[in-house]
Image (cartoon, rainbow, N blue to C red; front, side, top):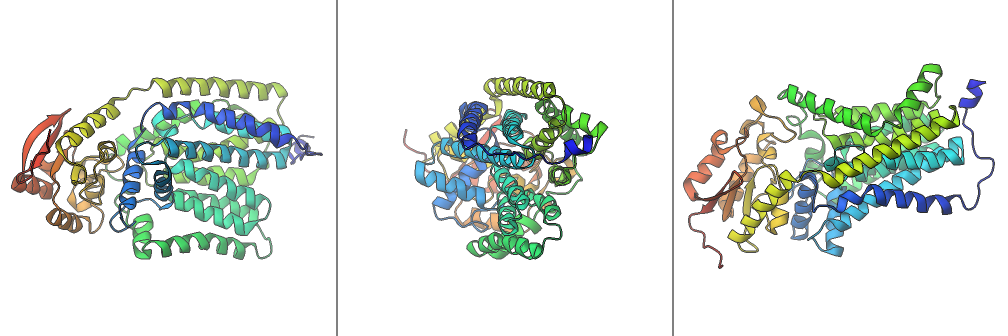
Length: 483
């Protein structure tokens, strides 16, 4: 009897008004869960990095040459397009796109669940995803980051594979990778769904290769390969700050467990009594977990990719449990969502306030068009100040490997991205910044541990002020801006 219940139960009839009723509800829920996203100009350095990249691209920069990042190009291009249409002074257009990305993910999950288990399951999957998608630290859940734009493509890959549209599934996997490398993890469950389908692997492979090859051709193929795949060995190393990274991983895991408190009990209960039969969903969850582990950094926004498979697994489990379990899961998810919404609206703005003060000092002491250097991990300072960076390396992390929270023995010039320091020296010699802000504030990438930066400051700059612990250095031959 139980095995029969676990078999996919499709809707006998498809009411014409199903999506007409469900889409407005999901759209409203998506808007409500994203209310905190507009409560501040930006949420984390990733948004700042992307905003500065987009401005550099708009000013004639070339991706993976004069504009560099360890991430694929899809999200920087998205920011650039949004800025071209709506201006670059606000991230609101990008936040709207992020909201639409979450809504599209919810709709695809609802469609998957409805096809397998019926109309009620479709509504359940879409709603549970949106409620749980903010179950992280607000700076991870509310930001318009890489993972947000990766999720619709991973969901689309599963949706297409479930319908044996394997060429389209391959294209979706390729686009997920182009949003963030770990998006490619969805290939594992898609391969399972592909099975022994005649010609399926060929169509899947061709679909996967198409967006990757096109992107490599649009950028620099060697640079694209280096910055997205081969050039991050030191960044992905496990050594350095093991205890710090472990604590971060456990903390963010605990936050996600709290955010998914409505999803996990039905899954655990069903696991105790029977197999759910949804092997592809378990593979999706396992592959996504590997994506979280990749690089051993455990940032909170990495955990977003676990939410879609968890929402579908919870939906599958609720199909064989009494109806009161569905009500309990929904109420628990709503309560957790309300708590995270309150957290997002009341979260402290300590680092943002610091960066805003730095940006104001930068704008006051330089003219528009003058190049500056912010030596730290807050590239958003450039964007808030309306100034272009003097180097393609927007954070000290790319030049010292502090990116990702590494410290101690794994931070220094010798751990930088290959070839970064010779390029940095050429940039400083060709077009030295009129102002340098040392925002290291005692961290292990300060000038006392970076000889090249220390020599640059000693030979051509003088200290002219301090802001919140950051030190301002003005070039000796620089003309001060008019008051």
